[in-house]
Image (cartoon, helix red, strand yellow):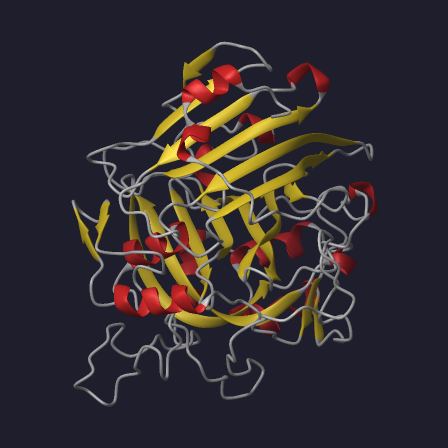
Length: 455
C-alpha cells in the first residue's frame, strides 16, 4: 500500500481552479437591476444553489428536497432508504482516476492510491434531498440583503435563522454559511466513535451529544451550545466537554469547560481550539476538525475558489442501516465500500491557508461545501510542505420530518498511517432527536456540577 497521496497541494489546487472546473455563479452577488445575473429564490434556490440541473442532466433540478416519509418509516426508528432501488451508476477504482480526476477530491484520489485492492468509489444517481423549512428559506432570502461581517470577517451581524450569505462573495462568508447551516434548533444524539485496528479489533467509545442552536430559533446574540458526555468505557463515563461558540468572538470569545468523570471537578478548557488534539479521536483529529470545521475563523485566510461538479458522499442511508454493527462495515483502513454512496453534486470549494505569525499542525486546508445545504462534505488537511496528512468526509442523510440534512457518520483518515476514525455511528442507537427541549442553563459550568451522565 502506498503511503504517499496521489496529488500534492499545488497540483490539487491547480486542478480545482483550472479550466476543467465548472464556472461559478456569475457575479457571486445579487443585483436585481441586472437581468443577466441569476436571482436568489428564482434561478437560484433560497440557499443560493443553482436550481436547474446540469447540462448532462446527471445533476437534476432542485425540487425542494426530501420532505415526505419514505415507505416503511416508523417514528423513533432510523429512516428506511428512500432511494433503495437506485442502481450503482459507475464505480471509480484506482485504474479510473485519470479518467475521472476532475470529479475526485485529492483525498479520494489518495485513498484509491493507498488502498488499490480494497477501496473504490461507488457513484449513484444524484438525489438532491437536502431540505429546510420555509421559514428558514424566507430568512435566508432576507439575510442576503442584511447580513454583514466586521472585524476582518470575524463578527457576524444582521443575519437571523437562515443561511447568512446565500450568494457568498468570499471564502469567509462561505465558511459562516457552514457554521450556521440549518440543522434544526436543537439535537440530541447518542453515537459511537470507532477506531478500527490492524488486528480487526474496534476501539470504541459511546457519547451523548446535545446541540442547541439559538441562532436557528431566531434568538439574537445567543451562543451556539454543545455538550459531549462519555457513556462508555466505564472508566471514563460521565466525562463531559461543554462549549459555547459565538457570533461575535471579539465581544465574547469561545468558551469551554471539562468535567472528568461523573462527579469530577469542573475546570475551564479555553484551549480546546485550533490544533489541540481532540481526545475523543486518539490524536487523529484536531479540535477545529469537529463537525468538519468548527471554532473561530481568525487563524486562516479563506479564499473562494469555484463552484464545480464533483463526486461527494451523499444520502448515506445504506451506511446508516439500523442494527448494523460497526464490525460489519468498518474495515481496517477504510469502511467497506459496499455501504458507501457517492453522487455528483455541485460544491463550493474554499481554500484555507494559515495566516502569518500563527502556528498550526495542519496549516493548509481545502473544504468542499454542498451547495444545497452548506454542509462541508469533504475536507483535506495539509502540512506546511503541501503533503496531504488528513482527509475527512461527512456522509449525510435527510431527516424529512424536520426537515434537515445532517451527517450520519464522519470519517477522518490519517494518511500517514493505516488508521481512521469513524464518528457519529448510531446504527445500534436511536436516531437523532430534534424536538427535545434544551435550555441555555443546560449548557453552563454550573449545570455540570449538578448533572450526572444519565441526566
